[in-house]
Length: 598
Ligand SMILES: Cc1cc2nc3c(=O)[nH]c(=O)nc-3n(C[C@H](O)[C@H](O)[C@H](O)COP(=O)(O)OP(=O)(O)OC[C@H]3O[C@@H](n4cnc5c(N)ncnc54)[C@H](O)[C@@H]3O)c2cc1C
Image 1: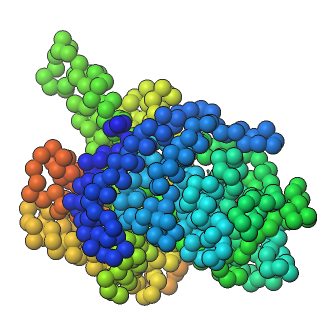
Image 2: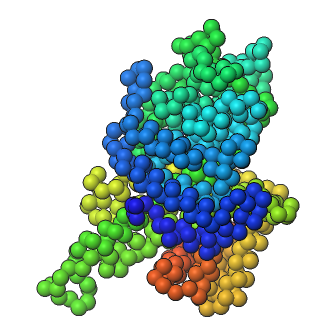
Image 3: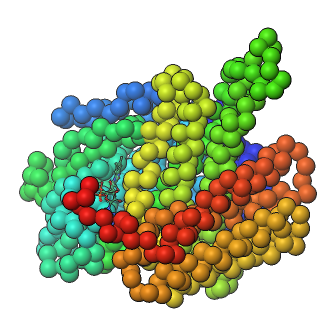
C-alpha cells in the first residue's frame, strides 16, 4: 500500500492512544463496533484509496472534464472508483442504522475518508458531497423525500450537490435571486442561475439530487427569506423509477486551477430547455419549512466545513510524506563542518534548513489532523451524550472550533504544500512530481465553504460573542483541563503548559478588551488576525494534548511527536504575540484606508 498518502501509525496514535475512540463503543449508538471493526474500516479505506483513487489522480488533473454541449465526459476511472466506494458500503458508514448505515463514529469515518482525500480529492469530492447531501435530507426531509432521494444516494445510484452560490451572490447569500413559485399540487417551480456547483452535471450516476437555496415570492428580505428545495435532474416517480428530465440545464463548465477531477458547473434552473410534466420550470420540493432553508443548509455546511478542513489536511499530509521521502533520497551538498569538498554528498534531509521545512510541515499537518479528529469525536459525543452537560459542552466546542477546523488547515496545510515544493527544489515546480498539484488542489480550501475572511467574521462576530461568551467558556474549560494535566505531568509538558496558559489568558483579555469599547467596526476589521492568532493557540493546545498522550513512551515515533510539539511552541506560538498586540489596540490601518489611496 502507498505509504506516502497518510501515516496509519499517526492515525492509530490519535484515535486510540489519545482520543480513546474505542471507548465510544460503550455508548448505545456505537455498541455494534469494536477496535477490530475500526481497524478493518481503516484498512479498507487505505486499500481502496490506494487501488482505485490514487492511480488516476494525475490523470484527473491533466484531463479535466469536458462538455460538448450535450454531455459531460469524465475519465472512466472516476466512475470505477466511486463504484468501488459504494460496493464497499462506505457511503452510509456513519449514518443511522434505520437508513442502512453502520453508525461508525465520525472520528473513525473522518480518518477513513482522509485516505480518499489524500489519494485523489477530485474524485473523492463526488462521494463527500453526496454523503453530506443525503445527511441533510435525512435530517430535514420528509419520509417520502428520504425514500425517493436519500436511499438511492446511499445505495450509490444517485449523487448529490449543494447549490447555494450564484454569479452575483457568493459570500452574501442574502442576495440570492433564484425564485421558487408555489404550485397548486404543493410543489414549486424554480427559476434562476447557480454558479460554481461542484458535481452539477455528469453521467456518473442515474440521477443528480440538487439541494437548492431559493426565495419564495413575498419572503422577508435577507437570509430569513431563504428556503431549501430538492431539485432532481430527473423526476422520480412513485415507484422509484426515473421520470421526466427536469428543467435544470448545464450552462457551462468552470476551468479551475486545481481540483480538476471534480466537474464544476454553472447551472440554469427553469431556463425552459426541458418541460417536466409538460411545461418549463424546474420542479422542486420544499425541504423543511419555508424561509428556514439557510438554517438547514448550515447543517450540511458545518459538516462540509469540517470536511474541507480534513481535505486540506490530507493534501498537506501527503505532500509532507512525499517531500520527506524525497529529502531522504536526494543527495546534495555537504555538511557545513567539517568542510571537505572530497567527502560524499549528503541527502538533503541532513541540512538543518530542510529539517526545518519538514518539521514545520509535520507540526502543521499532524496538529491539524489531531484537531479534525478531535472535532469528529465531539460530533460523536453530541450524537450519543451521556448527560445534558456533556451534550452542551460538545455542541459549544463544535460551534467555536468549526471555523478554526476549516480555516486553519486551509491556510497552514496549504503552507505545508508550499514547503513540500520547496524541499523538492526545482523538481517540485514541475509536473513530474505530485507536490505542485497538491498545492493547486489545496488552494481552493481557503475559498469555498465560506472564505477565510467569512470564517473570521463567523468566529469573532458570532461564535465568540454568542450566549454571553458561553462557547469560549467551554473551550477555556478544555484548555484549563489540559494545562492542569500537563502541570501535573511535570517536565517539559509543565513548561509548555505555562506558555499555553499565559497565551490563552492574553487571548481572553484581548477578546474582552476588543468588545469593551463598543467599536464593532474596528474589532471586526481585524477579524482575520484574530482568527489566525486564535487558530495557532488552539493548535498549540492540541499539540500539548499530543505531548501528554506520548508522555513516558519511548521510540522514534514518540520522540518525533515531542520534537514537533517543541517546534510548534518555539517557532509558531510566538507568532501570536504581535497579532494580539495589534488586536488589543484595535488597529485601524485597514479600516481607515481609502479606495483612492491605492
Ligand atoms: C472550485 C469551486 C467549487 C465550489 N463549489 C461550490 C458548490 O458546490 N456549491 C456552491 O454553492 N458554491 C460552490 N463554490 C462557491 C464558493 O463557495 C464561493 O466561491 C465562495 O463562497 C466565495 O464567493 P464568491 O466567489 O462569490 O466571492 P465573493 O463573495 O465575491 O468574495 C470575494 C472576496 O471578498 C471577500 N468578502 C466578501 N464579502 C465579504 C464581507 N462581508 N466581509 C469581508 N470580506 C468579504 C471574500 O472573503 C473574498 O476574499 C465553489 C467555488 C469554487 C471556486
